[in-house]
Image 1 (cartoon, rainbow, N blue to C red):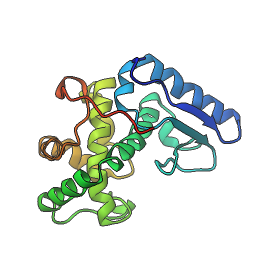
Image 2 (cartoon, rainbow, N blue to C red; image 1 turned 135 degrees about the horizontal axis):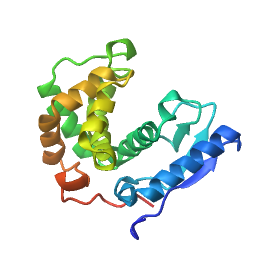
Image 3 (cartoon, one colour; image 1 turned 60 degrees about the horizontal axis):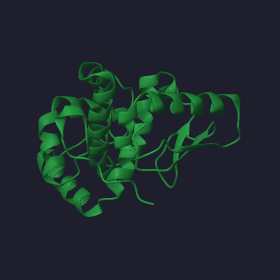
Length: 196
């Protein structure tokens, strides 16, 4: 583990067997991949059986979610929520990046059945979140595996396909707006430390 960051504290909502298993897996994967420290923007993770995974107000992983059954799925979900925190720390740059995306994609998919997020703004936000998430997964599991995984996700499918297909254009927006984070050899920039 990097000396800059330590693994987040994992808190179990009730201590159920499923929560303990997921918390242990997350801790094991994070410790096995020290580069994950580059994408930690929170200090605490809650594991809960009765919740869907979400980023705020506390990063929460849903132990019952089918998306966390594999190591790649668990890291995808965890990093997705961490990227929400990264972007939330940069509201002005985020607003400009979304404006750029609106010029690039005047019409986006909205709603789960269409492969978008819950509304138009959320779809634009998720183009950034999912791009950063997929980039981090590429560092951990290799670019081909990460992009294949992203392209077959059953939710936000239009968003993930767009991220894979338009990787260069979305990446340029993220770089231009100062939202880059360290992703393997693709960027020499280091992320800002998580907020205390």
